[in-house]
Image (cartoon, rainbow, N blue to C red; front, side, top):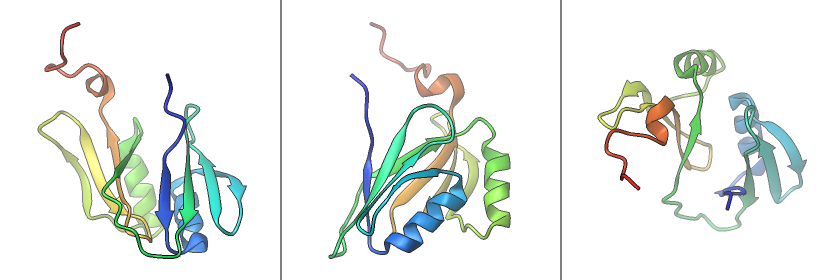
Amino acid sequence: MNLNQVTLPVSNMDKAVAFYQVLGFTLIVDTPHYARFECPMGQSTFSLSLEPEPTMNGAVIYFEHAELDRWVDDLLTKGIEFAQLPTDEAYLWREAILFDPSGNKLKLYWAGENRLNPPWRIKT
């Protein structure tokens, strides 16, 4: 089994599309109510769905990049605001936190080997 995609609710499609393009994602579907992006590496995609009513989205979306600090520095020069700059976390990931124009929480991170094989991984 493979995770196909995650769809985020947005309140303003134009602002949301522009935001994710600044982050470096490639727009592959663009309609007034739905947009889909390819990630710059790998084969992952994610989409945006225009919602007429505000939604409470408790999901946190993670985007991994080996050059996290350089990526964040580049985004800062493009005017992207962060709630947290890259920080080494106790669970061995380095993370930066930001919110898209609709309030969806995003974490840009680098975990390396610890993403799938942390020291506390269950032995199978």
